[in-house]
Length: 161
Image (tube, rainbow, N blue to C red; front, side, top):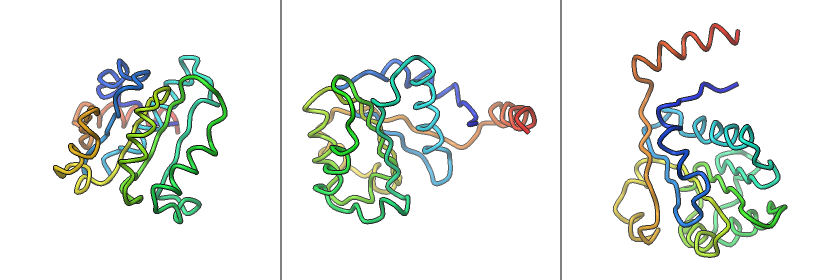
């Protein structure tokens, strides 16, 4: 079970179904970007979204280590599509794929994909991303736990133990 960072979820929820915007989650290393994306997946499923419409790719995982080109990424995504209609695409550590922007833009342009990405701050925050994603994205900057969140997390941890 993951700790829900409600402060961030409240900001992102209005855009869950937005297929015209790429949701970019940025933040320093180890601040919880991947956990936040997993929490969004759990939130979607909890709200009745069919799990077959959710594609979650952790590009840091060993099984995906050979995915390094846009064509490989596109093929992997295509192979994971199970249903027509709105699909939710989560790409974690997307900077591992050189030229991922073209693939992400292509799926956004096609429509019917609500896209969420995370990656290293050094890449995602550089000025090129703005140009490469053609301005159709929203950035959600994630920080390490605030003191209030720390206290909530501590309570959450002891309740789940």
